[in-house]
Amino acid sequence: MSVSFKGINEQVVTFRTEQELAVGTLVTVSANGTVSPCAANSKIVGVVVSSRENLAAVQISGYVTLPYSGSAPALGITAIAAASDTKIKADSTNGKLVTVLEADTAALTAGILL
Image 1 (cartoon, rainbow, N blue to C red):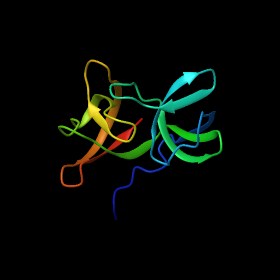
Image 2: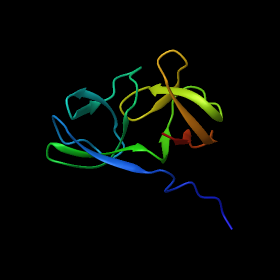
Image 3: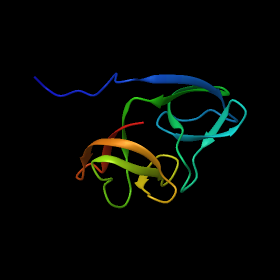
């Protein structure tokens, strides 16, 4: 038997965008019903799981595996923010509290519950 966290409280919401966004892009709310790619130190609303034209399906809760930069986020409840539009970083000042379930220091990824 193996461990799996997929499907836990997974929620995906459709937002407007100013351009088509790549799957895996970290996003923040930029206007009413609209998201844009995160800049460094932004609070993350979610992760793009699908995008077409000016719409994006964004996972706003549930388990995701994301690349990180800098030190691995601490396991357990910790604060993260965007390091870029595709990577997270540990950030107790600007961060959003999430639950980090796994950290892979070889692959530089963290498995988190948004």
